[in-house]
Length: 88
Image 1 (cartoon, rainbow, N blue to C red):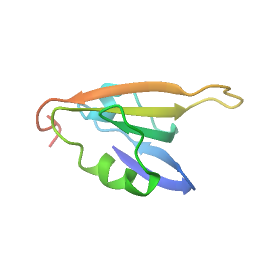
Image 2: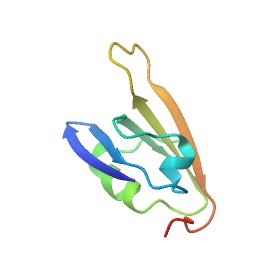
Image 3: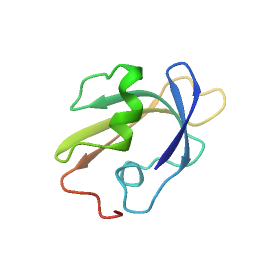
């Protein structure tokens, strides 16, 4: 997946590769990621880019997403990277 840094503590999903962890979690282009949770713990936004670029095999990665205008609560999705991603 590819992400663009659009605001403080917010990344926009710009593309999702088939078979990637982001694809498995159901992310789509246009989603806004406002929370990232590797192994169930909230990650500091300064570390998001590295965590999304190089997910740790075997570690669950949770996303807090905003997808719709006027959305009142985040969509929470997670994936588990059990081995090297198949899309590489």
